[in-house]
Image (cartoon, rainbow, N blue to C red; front, side, top):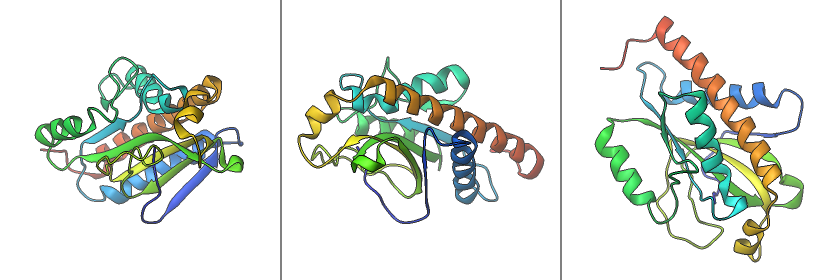
Length: 197
């Protein structure tokens, strides 16, 4: 589960008109800001578990991204989720494999009832596990979070009883938006930036 950090946030409901293009534009904007002159390897860190419906947003996004971007650097999916028990070792693996990567974290979050269904794209690190009182490392140059249910009390039960249809639809919007942003960034790199060494 994620909490907010730093500033510059975009927030759109997954059902609103042009949600794909709005979220894609927000992601693309953050990628350009984080990698303005020299391209960085982009790592997509999809956090969550398939053992709780509400917390399956990240793994669902990761699974969808693997089909859309088979050559992408994607950590976390339904088969091999990144969760509280393996987040630290996953981060160690990323740090030992890549030099100064651009890390984009994706996770579910809880919020107010009127915020359910909103997808947020925000600069700064994501702090997973906050809603469940877990002390996990903050991750990401920027993050994408989806508000899947109401927070404030009995969070574990709330996550277990979140509708899969909502989470699935939100994950699909996020994955397609990431795919489009990545496509446009790859095109931009070829036209404007020196290749990564």
